[in-house]
Amino acid sequence: MTQIKAFILDLDGVVTDTAEYHFLAWQRLANEEGVSFTREDNDKLRGVSRRQSLELLMGDHLSAYTEEQIQEMMVRKNEYYQDYLEQMSKDDFLPGARELIFEIKHRGLKVAIGSASKNAKTVLSRLEILDAFDAISDGYSVTKAKPAPDVFLYAAEQMRIAPEACAVIEDAGSGVDAALAANMTAVGIGPESRVGKAHYCYATTAGIDLDEILGL
Image 1 (cartoon, rainbow, N blue to C red):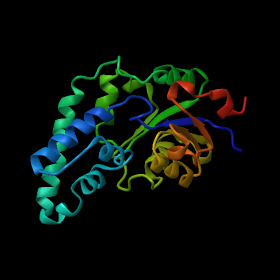
Image 2: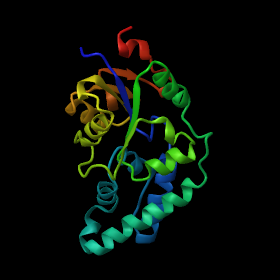
Image 3: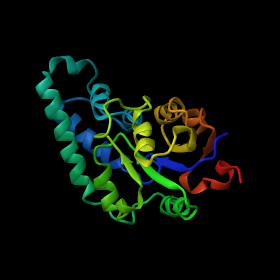
């Protein structure tokens, strides 16, 4: 196996958890549009783009909306989400996430963010860690969302690291699929039922064993 020279981290569910903010924003939109939306429904949106999330949220109801109305709903949801993000601070790292980022850097490896979010830089700024990354690949960087490998390939390109020398840390099945499609080492966070296709699986970010992944 090629020596790993860089790590690409998904943002939500790996570095921090803004899932509750996403849920509240989508729920607010759903209430306004008269559509049912539960926490179970929200779980299906993990690792999914905003457009796909809206399609899952609205279901058959979406056919009654014009493209202009669809775009307006996506903007409205993002505005609600942005409002909730104002509550974030440097205390909102998932356990072990900040330590992991700086341990990767301490080992002389590069580290990037690979996220479908268009709010990645805002979140990283709120966490006061934006400057720690060698590259940020987000919803503005590519057009094809995970499970397409584009967001990770873009991050590797920005770092000038070959894809096969990158390891991706992901908590979504679509993200693991994207990492594998990019010919990268996949590290899954969460239950095996969700991320079991990854080369390495850990229950939490704090449980990641860098020595194991690096073959040390």
